[in-house]
Each structure stands twice: as C-alpha cells, then as structure tokens.
Image (cartoon, rainbow, N blue to C red; front, side):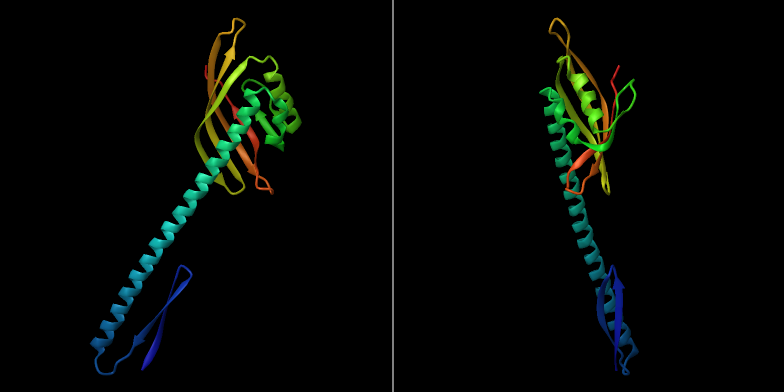
Length: 189
C-alpha cells in the first residue's frame, strides 16, 4: 500500500512517498524517518540558500542607496561650492523643510532656494564637505546622517574651519529620484 506525505515549508512543497509495509513495521519506520531526515536536511539547505540570497539582495540595496546618497551629496556640494543657489530648489520636495541652527524653519522649495542664496551671497564659504556616518531606508523614505565641514574666509583671506552634523530625510519620488524632505544641521561650538 502506498500513501502520500506532504510537508509545507516557506511556501515550497516537498513531496515524499511514505511506504506502508505489512511485513515489517520496523522497515516502514526506518524508511519513514530516513525520508523525514532527508526532508529536514533539504529544508535547512533551502533555508540557508534563501537567507544568503536575501542577505545579498539587502546588501545590494544598501550599496545602491549609498551610491544614490553619495551622488546627491556631490550634486548638493557642487551647488554650494560653486555658489549656484538656483540649483538647490530642485534637490528638495515641494513641501521640504530646512531647520538651520538658531533660526526659524524654512518651508518649501522656493524659500529654501532663497535661504541658500542669502547664505552664499557673501561669497566667503568655501570647501564644504560631507562625510556620511549612516544611511537607512524605510519604504519610500531614507535618511542620511553626516558630518560636515566648511571653511569661512575672513576679511584678511584666512580660512576658519567650522563643522557640524546634519540629518537629511529623503523621499523617493515616482520618477525614481530621491529628494530631500527634511534637512537639519547644527554647528559644533
């Protein structure tokens, strides 16, 4: 007599044939346990393969996000370091907010563009940098924590290095772009 034995694991079906032998119950039990042992080994091997595959996909997504953040930083720094404030509004969402230290929030793309224009107008800010500390993604949002440095040139032409931390929250757009939704920065004292 033949019977079917089905095990369901992680959405995959593994079918084993269970034999029923009238001659020897021991033989049946031995074959049944041998089959279940192999099935368990196959399940564990399948789990290991799936975990490795998922880890590789997660790692690739993190590397892709880091590349996106590095590219956005390069674009932002190019606008800042070349004193091109007109480039800033396109890097922020329509409802973006910038929270500068010791000042009121700046709301919306156009106001943010004006904020950066006013900050850059004296022409004494040079060599702005970002160093990414961490990035994370949760669905359509990602954040970047970074350290920044900047040289402020005084009237005699001497630079004073200032630094701080920044957090930018990005929103993934329907066209695939990541735009800054919230930009917070401080100044080390």
